[in-house]
Length: 158
Image (cartoon, rainbow, N blue to C red; front, top):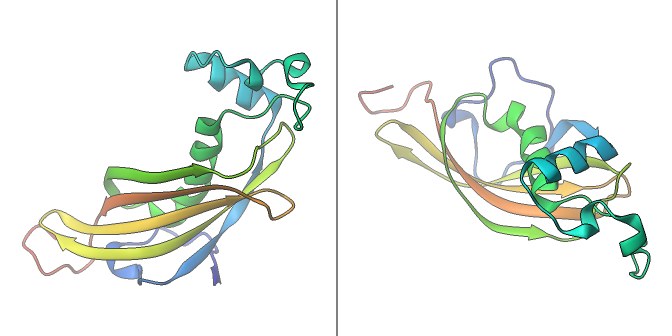
C-alpha cells in the first residue's frame, strides 16, 4: 500500500494501476458543527443525528453523524489523490455505512483501484473508497467511477 504524499497536480488516468491501494495523507475529525449543520442543510430530520436524549435508549448512546457526511468526508479526503484531474463524476455504487461515526471521531480514507479503461474524452477509473475511524474500525465503503484527464491517451482529445 502506498501512503500518498500530496502529488502536485494530482494523478492522471495513466497514473492509476489496477490493484493499487492508497492510504490518503490527511484525516478529518468530525466536529458536531460539521455534522449537524450539513444534516440540517439537506433537511435530514432523523433525530438520531442531533438528539442525544433520543439515542440514550440505543447501544450507541449518543447522536451519530449522518451517513452523507461520512461519505462526503471520505471522498473529500481522497480527492487530492484521485480527483484533481477529474473531468466529471460518472457514478457511485455499493455504498455501505459499516459502523456509526460519532462527533469527535477522526475519519481516514483509503482507495483501491478496481479498474480502468480509455474513453473518448479521457480515461475512466473505477475506485473503491474505504473510511476508517481513529480506532481503525471501517465506517464506510463505496465504489466510484471518474472520468479523468489523460496525459498521453491514444485518442484525439488528449
